[in-house]
Amino acid sequence: MRGSHLVLQIKEAMPLRYNLLRLPTTEAIKNGAMAGRRIVTAQRTLQSSSDPFLGSTRFGGRSYYIRQFRDMKESIKMDKLDYESFNLYCQICSSRLAMAHFQSLTAPMIRGYLKGQKILDDSFVEWTNAYAKQVARDYDAFRNSLRTNE
Image (cartoon, rainbow, N blue to C red; front, side):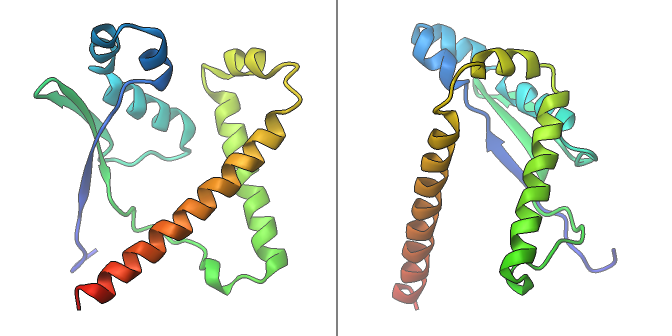
């Protein structure tokens, strides 16, 4: 689109937390060298249409992935939704995400891990609520820093 900008994000891809807990530090770091490729492969698997700029690289002994900052696609104006519409939107997004994960190569492993774990739903709700509260605190701190810098 004429007059629009392309901004690419470069993010460091960290080793899997599982590897950090289970492997010696040097081995976990060595396995993390391909973390960018792992993230890119997972995003391509889970997304219906992938970011054309999505890629990975390594330099300085670290792994990174690159993506387009904003995809310039239309999106729903969340602040314009009433409660019922917002609830439906959340249900659709979560079901689409679940379907995408079901198509991934790790789906059988995840299913095996979750089998018989009845407290998982409660754990997800607890984590989600804590995360939402942290985001709100971070946003307040960000807004306060803007006021301080004026």
